Figure 1: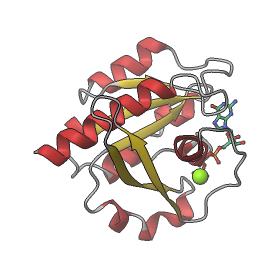
Figure 2 (figure 1 turned 60 degrees about the vertical axis):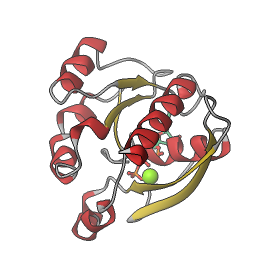
Figure 3 (figure 1 turned 180 degrees about the vertical axis):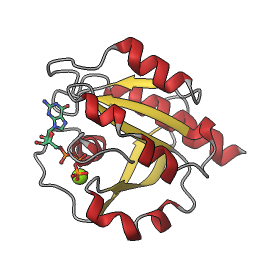
Length: 160
Ligand SMILES: Nc1nc2c(ncn2[C@@H]2O[C@H](COP(=O)(O)OP(=O)(O)OP(=O)(O)O)[C@@H](O)[C@H]2O)c(=O)[nH]1
Ligand SMILES: [Mg+2]
């Protein structure tokens, strides 16, 4: 999971893992979570590890090594902050060696005041063919679809 500082990566990770909203401090370096989710289609449990990469630039020098072996990339932007989209190139650069068919754009904070339009998000994601999941890590809106999208992709990669 990558994206600018404050877009809500750690809040998304903790909602995936715990199903609730937890307020977090800025991540120092990176945060690692173990996430188990039941694949509704088969009833099997899918276990994965979330590498939540801190957005602040002072941690950048050691982060790329943690992306080795990544199966699914969540590129997180904040729909209340246009800067989070305009400055996303740095993150796209960091994940460029991971195949683009494993990328998902997560548009977070849809409970807030919208400053990034759906059209802008679609255009951004279409440039690399990724789906867009609109979510609020605060209210939980959109998480069912996000979880389905991530699990489907994890299973696709595992089968390949
Ligand atoms: N309104 C609203 N606030 C959110 C949402 N998700 C996260 N936040 C808030 O945004 C702030 C930053 O969230 P974090 O999860 O710490 O952001 P981050 O991307 O992990 O930031 P770094 O660790 O610095 O990279 C916190 O105050 C969160 O409570 C959301 O969906 N809606
Ligand atoms: Mg964080």
